[in-house]
Amino acid sequence: MNSIYNCPHCGKKSFTPWKKAFAGQLNSPGKVCVECGQKCVNGKGATIFNAIYCILSFALIVVIYLFSPRLIGTEYHWVYFYEMPISAGIILLTFIVPKIVNAFCFKLSPTIRIDAVK
Ligand SMILES: [Zn+2]
Picture 1: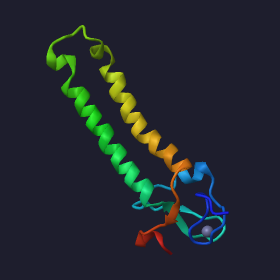
Picture 2: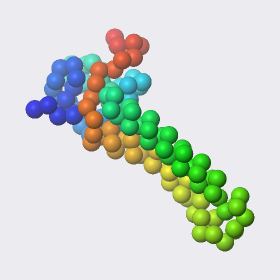
Picture 3: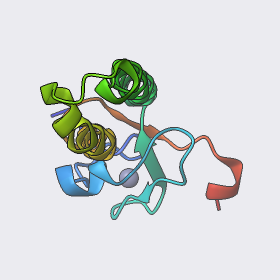
Picture 4: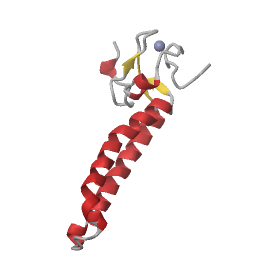
């Protein structure tokens, strides 16, 4: 069975969602497959998703900042009280969401980093 937890090198199902979540993207060193000892990372799909997600959350933070009541001058607007928690939440999600997506979506691929190959 060819699931997203199969090693791209040996084809064995050697990854768990947890391990896959921390395997990183194409530009990261990746995680070692317990079956064949070769390194694997989350593939192109995950890398593209993460890049888009990071840009979107950054854009959202900028938008919140631009429409901040502190700048507009309406201190009693509800955003005034929630701006910091919302921004902090978005930053937190920027770290968490790609991990969850990596854990449950997209296929693994061999690492492309030269220094990661023995
Ligand atoms: Zn393997």
